[in-house]
Image (cartoon, rainbow, N blue to C red; front, side, top):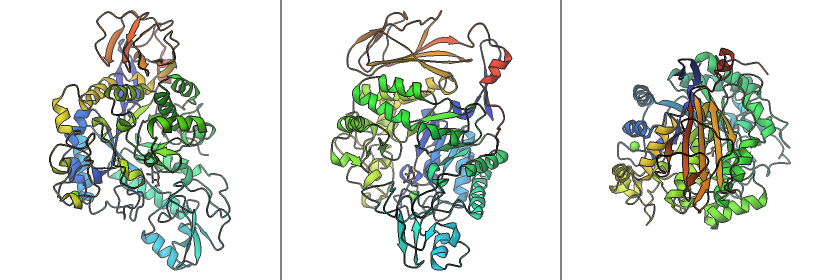
Length: 580
Ligand code: GLC
Ligand code: CA
């Protein structure tokens, strides 16, 4: 259930597995096709597990694998108890689980239960008959609601949030696209069904779920406007999940204001009693702004503003995910700055708030900058989530609509279709990127494996090193003062396992950094963008343009040794919760 770490003194400290994990996010359909039909599948993924375990990731987060018309990347489900036939069947899923177990890889699934596909039999029944047992599983209005064209998640593409359905003779609510009717999660039958879905996949061995659209899932939707949120369902989900499997984890997608984060995590003065993990959206925007400005201050401010977590709580950090870079919570001028730097062309932009590009192309394919950016992410407090293809620096295809631009097939080799599939190119689910810079003949796994200085080799080294530094996931992070100007971010992370110092130079100048009040008897450099020499003088640390250094200051607990009470303080302990 947890990873035990023996410290220098032989004392035990316990770190929950998810605070020391590296999550790899992938869509089975675009990863590896095994049977030449142009669609990635479970057998294909199985054949790539060796690659993933060598890379150093520990958790696979699969985007929805259920039967789906796939009009929104699978986030439009027609049956929660199965896998889409194009991916294989449940037998293939259990084979995948077996092989992941053998390699110590965990699997997390997307739980997409804010809405179903409009082709789900529940909705088909609900819309066709007012007396259907499923009618009240969705959210209806007999009149057109006053807010029927408000609150769209995909503005510019999605026109409404309430749509009239002829068969039903009523308007139904959909926070997302019109083909994704919202489930009525205030209905106890719907809640019971969702809990059953969780139980089903937990029984098949998954280690947890990413909860899609968590704030909307608990919204009390009413015609005319939502009446707040009822978070009690999150407690129900957490309780049942933890009873079935004590170490299972819930990771919420909740891009909400800081004051509301506790509603998802539970309160800082208690153990994490709702969802253990949250994506660090605010930190993501700060990272984007900092990279755009070549200035560490936005990250410093964001770290200082991170709300304290309940015991056992963890941030999931990310630079890019399967959606657009969402800049909606930045101030308008800040958003404009990031857009100007990373998404200047209208075609780069989407939904009036975001950028539909991969990080490599946002950073102009600048290798040094890309590594520094990922080093920053990896050293932020929390559990890093990495998007497939970013480990080789893949680009996007702006000819594809909306977020599909960044969902192209994985580029394995120079072979046809980048080794993704043996199908004819026009039969692929999506075309493989084939341009002069990011095309599969230039950017692929096979070439990069042979090259010790490739992006892929860099990722392997950085992830393996990160896993030797459990402080990052479970410790306390402090931003340090230096004399080197705003381009440098210096931060330290402390835990009973040890202490690490991290330096990042976001700018283009060579620098020498003096970190104030930094002491260490035997500092050791464990990772850096280059060899800075054997002598480590903490009062004068050279830092190349876009350079980074990871320096271990201490192994084991600080002196004086903490008492057992303090050691225990850092543990998660058995799952504990309170009812709302
Ligand atoms: C989440 C997903 C996104 C999807 C949406 C609707 O925001 O990340 O990809 O389109 O939910 O399910
Ligand atoms: Ca296939």
